[in-house]
Amino acid sequence: MKSLLLSIVLFHSLLSYDYKLQPVKIGESAAYCFFGLPQVMDEHNNGNMSNSCFVTLGNSYLVIDSGPTYQYAAQAYKKMQTIKKLPVSYVIDTHIHDDHWLGNSYYITLRAKIIGSRAFKELPILEKTRMQKRISPEAYKQTTQVFPTLFVDKEKVLDINGKKVYIKSVNHKAHTNSDLYVYIPSQKIIFVGDLVFNQRLPSLRDGDINGWLEALKEIKSMDVTYIVGGHGENIDKKAVDFTYNYLKTLRDEVKKRLGEGEDIADVVNEVRMEKYKNVPFYNSIHRQNVETAYRMLEWESE
Ligand SMILES: [Zn+2]
Image 1: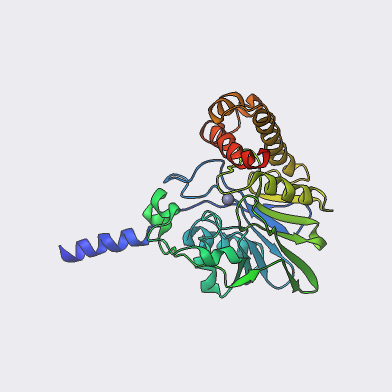
Image 2: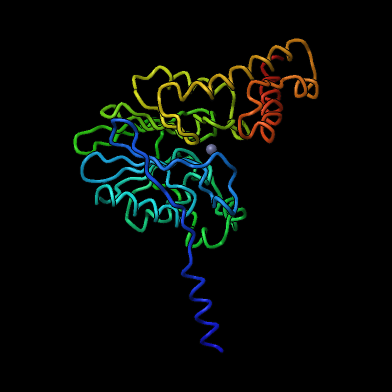
């Protein structure tokens, strides 16, 4: 009986969730991405709702966002090896939201160096992460909270096989207080994390609407062919427009009503922006975004 129990326990501990990751090549560049689903994290997608990308610039891979779990990252690495057998030298965490970096716990077992914002230093080690609370234990298995050990203050430049990688800190609050973007001129590509969402509405919850629009303006002005966001599969130069236009309209609409002295409840009811009503997350996020924008912008109007 004991050995039967033991083998059942063993069998279950061997089970892990298959994310069925498929790398998608980014145009003519040397980059690939695993695109996440336009959903919230739950026990069906097990956190596979954000983008994780990798680039080879010669003799190693650079990973941009390590994904939601140890298992996810291990499976991503296995897929990378089918393209080219190479080690991972660096992992860059674009910001502090845990769907983007919990895979660090796998990459440190490969001795990759983890790069991120200094804001990670302020993050507490949680008893249970948001991810852990929402996904299945099999998928979360072996995941631990591993933070970057190399920090970007303003800009960090990597030289990989003679090719430059610019990691820039946004240096003010935008999507969060920890946003980085990764610009690789030789590939005409920029990875911007959650500064750019497409195919779903962005959330303003941890951000600043003015700072975010400012960061997007800078990204729009860059000479690149590909812009890869943290959510969504559009990767051309226009990928940035969806988030920019949504936030810009939101700001204009709220500001106008603030100028007319309307109170928050009326503004939340009126700023519907119906054009976006069929975009995923509209029902769960839009009203909250209007409220957040109102609270941020009312300081300005005083
Ligand atoms: Zn985020």
